[in-house]
Image (cartoon, rainbow, N blue to C red; front, top):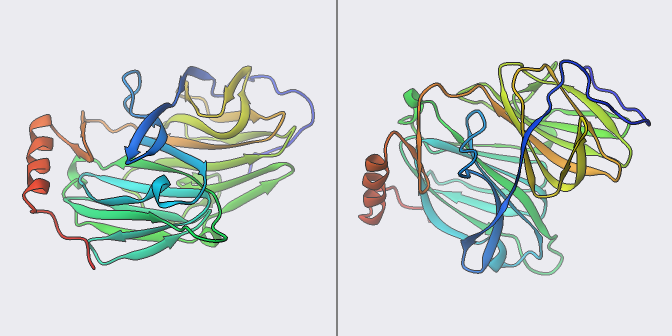
Length: 294
């Protein structure tokens, strides 16, 4: 594992990823009074590898107004819910009822069609809700696959710890540390925690398009500072990513092998055309999706 910690400043070295562009996430209405910071998609950047969507919610008091999302459909993608604090209950049309806690992964494959809902754990003693939901587009040949759901507890995800750095491998790999999450394409998805003054150099797949999103604090990539709520789109090709935080930070590194074909994100669907998206929306309005299991 080529991961290290040091006390001095960290300079960009040859063969390291640098920042191509910085994109502040936009405050966006989710449902009711709830708002999120939406980092993807955006006009300037539609996707990073297969990742086509990234919503950052909280930290906020755990109340229904924050994150109670009623039943809604998905097609042609995988939803990935990941929490830093708080808890959410997932329910779907497969009959799944699953609580998710910090560090766990809820990985739902919509395939040809699924319906799900999410409810925040509220009440006395509930921790503030803080987390990220991403969508991973399925390759064209897999978009009509049977829907499925996988829950991976935090204890089953590889956690690499060094002085001042903790890296949890949500999907893909970090050197020899490999996530048990099954994916349809080659991904990188890492949860990186840096204590104050920590620096790390992470090996990354040279074939992966990558970005990082800062959920807490501020991080430096080479000589570029990236603050909370900002998506840093990284240059392609280099085999390592160097990070430093003066005051401590929490960030996600995400991306993967670019999907070769064009795709359309239409409402909650990844489809081949706007016409297909409209047809699937008509299916939803006509009640032709599976019902949410009681």
